[in-house]
Length: 406
Image (cartoon, rainbow, N blue to C red; front, top):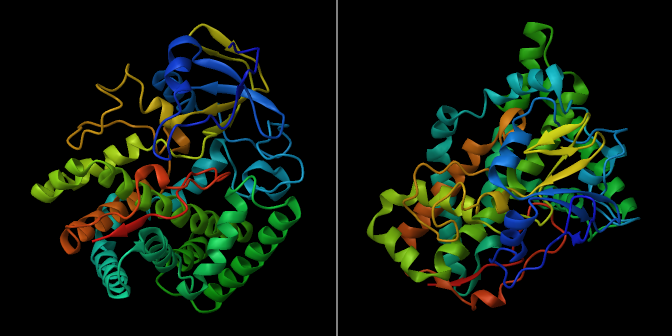
């Protein structure tokens, strides 16, 4: 394996649905800057060490691929996935002052303080969803009963979008983020439908503003005269709806599966619920099922990384989950330590493009875990861990179902 010999093929195989690829450890030790081949046949460079990935993500010159970059594609020819097709790119600028301007407008609505204010409403919704699951009887699919609906309700509340459209949001999200399930034509049609939907929603907020994020951004634009443009408002809504529910919906299920896979973890939390906050971050760090491709970045110029020069035009894939298990950065990285603190994992990225919604995601995960510990202390997986099935082709990773009983 070498940088110039793309012998590594993504996604890497794993032994089980919650297990990390064995190749991660080998790559970190022997070839931390490796050439890789994608399902599309295109090639790129894979990073697996913590310090390498943090350095690259924190560099202001480096950004997500933009239209015209000729970056490596993930999806095979004729398959979908907005994240791999530049003709469906959003209007939000991916780098420079334009991106920072967008983050200044939107980011202030996703602070930890604002998320704390949303917690009581999240708790009420979570309790009603858990009660409904219990009423329907065991076994139940935790992902369908709680993991999916909770983040949808929360992000719809934030944006002022009707929660009853959640099935449409789910389809659009899957079409954007799955690189093997849909054809390119299906993904383009989904993008067109979602874009039209969000355009109508933005116009409705202009006509009758509420207290939601989109209404606030519109009013801010009117007052300041330099707020977000209509395409930016539309695409902000699209991006937040997709990112705000798809990743968290999958993470709720994966987190509970990881905690129940070793019963001592669940019992530890029952005995000491104060560990919920550190347990959530440890689940985020330990998650090995994050899609298999990593975070994509494009190099606009030559970039030196620990003595290795990556040439201009290289598409880099940052394996965040591999970095989160780097023994150079974490003690006993393969152990799930519910008390780990500090926990500087890279699940939400780093630098100028770190995840805007990380406080929201943490709050939802904490509320979901707290409620399940309180309401269903006897919760357990209804199938062996080995029988859990991964969602194939999904760039954010996930399990098809999380069967549970109590």
